[in-house]
Length: 198
Image 1 (cartoon, one colour):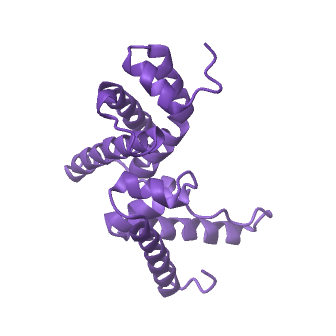
Image 2: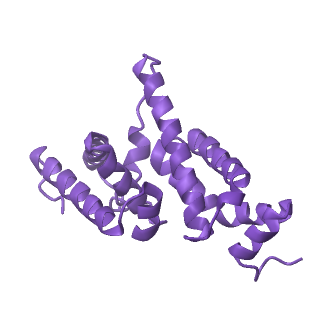
């Protein structure tokens, strides 16, 4: 059977009847979005892959509980987000015990808009690298609610409604959190001496 024109709802119905190929198609359709949600939460490619895999396993086991109140993708992303947050909490506990691992600084900086692509001078390269480190530090300093909303919005993958479903709050609240996170980061960067931050 060709699954090109088959909806997610139809694939869910087939998967509930035991059609593993139908669930495999759902995985294929949504694996990139699930991975990006997990990556936004944990910041490590390996941890994001593990969280995404856990999310698909959990979704498969809980397929009977999918009511269709939201789209399958939104339901799946909510599961992925919770799996990733649980993984992040576990990592944080492990790091707090003194594992010696580094920070997610490089991963967090990826959510900053690209710097100009002209070949910069060595001085500009150093300034740009410092700016990325400072942005990453300010993102880490945000409250978890502001940071999570910002990272998901900055990924460009999800709309406010999807983020709201993933985080279990209203879309208007997510819009405020993203706006507030950006405002705080701009303010703190200006306090650090960056005059040109928007």
